[in-house]
Image (spheres, rainbow, N blue to C red):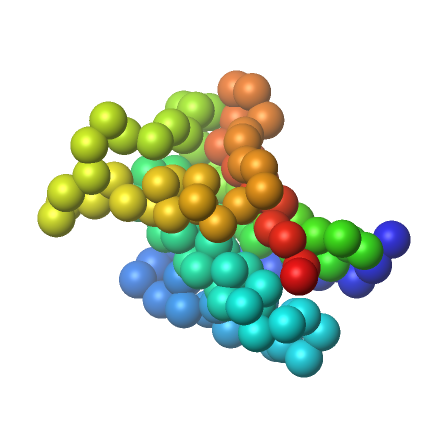
Length: 122
């Protein structure tokens, strides 16, 4: 098992930037640049969704495993299952589309607002 870390953010307009900082400080120099960029963007999108649609504090968990990075974002929402919107436009709907393209796989624990994404490290 590799390195893991957990961060908690207040729900405000800076939480996505703070999530990117946490990812960079934890994984920077340990991943190829492209893998780090995938992790930064994925964390930003998932934390932004938690901020927009969830409740309470937001927790970001990172696990650098041998062959992948796992990001998990948890908030105290009501368990509304995240899904990719039918259409994306200037009002949103891009976040999970981006995560879907970047991740090896992603999903949520049923009945919770605990979303995970696995990213390639190469």
